[in-house]
Length: 304
Image 1 (tube, rainbow, N blue to C red):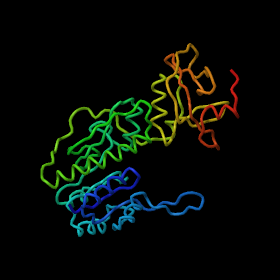
Image 2 (cartoon, rainbow, N blue to C red):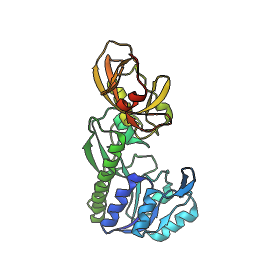
Image 3 (cartoon, one colour):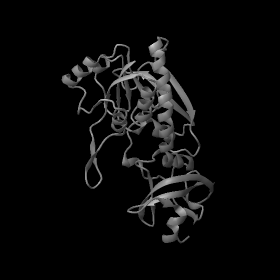
Image 4 (cartoon, rainbow, N blue to C red):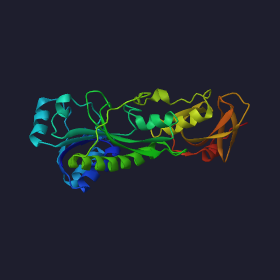
């Protein structure tokens, strides 16, 4: 099929690669403008742009796709499909009406649950044991379009958002490949979303980082897993903030929430609000590198 692809981060890369491998005619790749990074403020291309250049595909990086000149350019391409995978901007109705077959999106949850910008993180934050990807028709209401198909996967008990992100990006590419084939064959289903969508998967913020030790140990571990790689859960050790990268539910304790119960090779155990411990196994002090809790204790002993 003749496709205009829109995507920006690493999550979008497997989907673009799969469409190209499937032999579709990708007439344009739209992605966010290059952004300056690091100390030299060098302009860095988006992951999607890097792949598009590698594949020899034409790349477009407009500041806005709402401008009539951009819309006219896309109309001139005469796409059958508009495929959107984490592009990063809300698209106007005028754009969604351009493709002759459909405008579709890869969403990283089992819709209608976790509509919004951060569904992978929120699935873990809310303690879900299963998630997936949904291929849906794009409409004016965010993530509320009719469903073409969905693929499910379990969330590992120790899996963090970064690991799940990588897995779902590949699962999304598989689902997209199947959906595009069905659309091409004329066999694609179109199922309206029904049921309670549940909590909205809002963008993450730094305000979500501090650990509240009054919460249950399970909730705290989910917070640690769900906020990786950004903004990361955080705690105070010896009056200084540390980012927390790994934690697990430990033994029962009668200590008050937030009390350090033990500190050694297995990690640093804090009392949680439900009478169980959270054992921190990996952390990053401010101005330092990520390390195991055992290595941290070598230079920062905790007197019990």
